[in-house]
Structures are given as C-alpha cells and as structure tokens.
Image 1 (cartoon, rainbow, N blue to C red):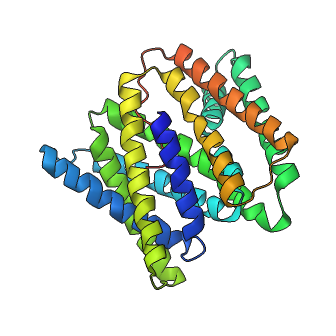
Image 2: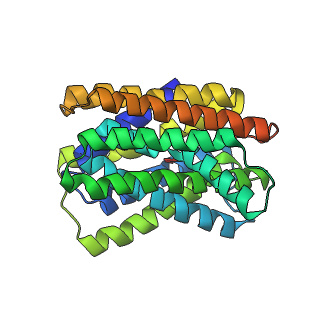
Image 3: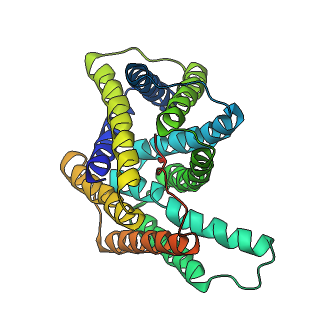
Length: 293
C-alpha cells in the first residue's frame, strides 16, 4: 500500500506536468490506452480470460470511474497537487454520507450519529483546505476535485458488486481502462489534439504505467492486508504529494490547510472503521480514484 500511494502521488506529478501540454481528455485517453495494453498483455501472459458475463456492470462502473478520473485529472492540472489529492481522497467520507442517505430513505429508526459526525468533520476539513489556498480562478478545479471523490465512492460500490459477482480484479481494471480510452478519445477529439514532444510522450507513458502499477499493488494490498491498515497507509499519498508539491511546484500550504487535511484523514479513517464494523464480512477489493485505475 505504501508503494501504491507513492506511485499514485508520482502519477499526479506526471499528470500536472502533462496538463501544460495536453487536454484532460488526451491524458485520460493515453492513460487508458497504456493501462489497456499493460493489463491485456499481462492477462494473456498469465492465461486469464477477458470475456465477461456481466458487461452491463462493467459499463456502469466505467461511467462513474472514468468521470471521477477525468475530474481528478482536471483538478490536478488546476489546483496545488496536495489539495487535488486530498479532495479525491474524500471518497470514504462520501461513502459515509451515502450510508446515511440510504438509512434515511429506507426509513431506519436510527441513523448512526458517529457517521454523521465523520461527514461533518470531513467537510469542515474541506472548508479549511480550500478557503486559505483557493484562488478565484481555481473554483472549477475545486468543484471537480470534490465531485471526483464522490464519483469514486460510487465506483467503489460498483467494484465491490463486481467482486461479489465473481469478476477478477484484472478484468475490472481492463474494462475500466477500455472505458477511459474510449471516453478520453471522444473528449480529446472534441477539444482538439496536440502534437507530441519526447517530454510530453514520456509523461503520458509514465502516467499510464504508474497508475496501472499502483493499481496492481493496491489490489494486492487489499487482498492480503487489513482494510483499516490499508486505508491508513493509503493516506500517505497526501504526504507524498506535499513533498512533491513543495519541491517541484512551490505549492504554498499554510497551517489552516494542514489542519483541514488532518481532519479529512481522520474522518476518512473513522468512516472506514465504522463501515467495517457495520459490515464485517464485506471485502474491500480496491479503492478506485481513483478508484483511480
């Protein structure tokens, strides 16, 4: 999980640098293309089967996952790297909010007050993260980052459902990569294609390889580790992004932002723990973010 967090943060650096040369759609397209070739080749080498009995489930998972990915890449290109990474990591808090909404809709006699508290703490953290650092021109990026976390939570639910349907992780990642490539191509053609330089092409290739490698490591971590431990280590991605943002992009993060990030991490961990207690036999398959990959 530490390796996955580091690779995702490094991918964020590549996305931010590539956004100076390519549109969000182009980055999503090449990220999907590289992931598709990577997973496709690995599956063929290991003798796996890519044909799926539940194509509709993969379609819905790809819709939410690709939307989350596109919004996240846009946020990375317009916000300080630590801010964009933190907003995407809000998925656990969105999950808690979904659980509260589901309980209300089903007419539950009592809503878990601890979940309500985690949501309130999480959004208080968001307010602290955004208020001191956000420039007026970054408003769209901030909203994109917030919604990327929400859609990642939806994609997480769909990945869990696919796992319960018997779909192996590599097949889930393969069809997600196919969706990323398809949607990214449409967005890229609509916005216009840019020519390549060696540096630009290298950044696109690195984005795809880093994201796919990180997804493999993360999937392995959830397969052999404990959910809460993985969730805790996963937030190291924020720390890695702080180092990158400070060293490479001269990002300015003040004390209020740091307090906000601590609140978001604490709320996310609490939400993960409460979900695990509420459903102790449920298996977390992966976090998509970017559920990224």
